[in-house]
Amino acid sequence: MKQRDNRVSNRNFERGFDYFFAQTEGAPTNEVTLLADCRRVFERMLSRVMTARQRVWLQMYVFDDDALGRCFERALVGCVERGVDVRVLCDGYGCRRSRLTLMRRLRREGVRVAVDGFRWGEWPDCRNHRKMLVADDVAVVGGVNIAVRYLRSWRDVCVEIGDGSVERFARLFLTDWHRACGEVLEPATECDKSASVGCVARNTEEVFVRLVERTRRRVLLSTPYLVPTRRVERALVESVQRGVEVVVLVPERSDTPLVDVATGECARRLMEQGASVWSYVAGFNHAKVLVADDVAMMGSVNCDRRSLRRNREVMVLLRGCVVESIADDFVHALTLSRRVERGGVSVMRRAAELLVRPLHPLL
Image: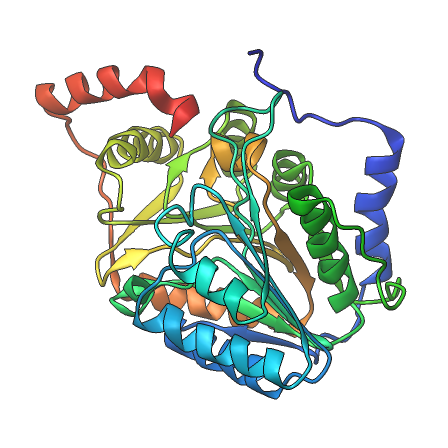
């Protein structure tokens, strides 16, 4: 199967990208709240579910049948009993352990459940990696899955959106819902074109590159896996060469040892060009954040080839005062990290990197 090239140069994309910046220049973002702690994210999501009156649409890559998953199960069933429209959409691979347990129980209790699986013509490892909750007129979007392990020293971030931008994420959910189970649902309301929050669901690599290319002062990148495409790596290097401060935050150890080897090699190349790389030591840095001058993009996209080119992902594009809150949280994470110093690499490490390099497109 040929690798799909996400590069987009058509005028519609150019106009759409620039339209966001023109429309949101100085736009208020008072209805966007940063949730920079996993425990706080889950508390806010449960609160929104338990107080919903019209709809609860939950989309998760991982929805485990553990103590936290059962808390959400009880909250969702309570919504059904109140007459709320409750829908849960999960990825077939991410929820492979809970499909026969938690998902079956939810269906028996009246929750509409759909599982998004493999389609012919796609990459075999293509996943629906989106994570978001739409509860009435509020959306919570970010990188957090529903699993107890997120409460064990995992660093992740989400945003809660309460303005007209919510319908953009609601429409994205309905598109995925139709794809997963064939049911066509019409959106209840129109999107607010003047809303100050953008929704990036396609052309992720292109948006990433465009944001980095526009920078003049700073690029702050947080990612659990650093295996970028050549275009993304080139954009970061060119930013350093223009005098932009480029700071990259990765975990000391991720949940995938092979990716750690690849991350180390990519980080070393960036450091050789002048970028600053930090290793988060207080747990697993799972946050996916890009701050490019006065714009922030955050959500479900890892800085790796699968996320940037193959998976179905969602990112929130933000301007305004919330961007500084995101940047402040990034700087706080650096206080719990160590700066990676340039130095010699052992023969064993070089050998491991050579062995893993052909696997980069799959990591």
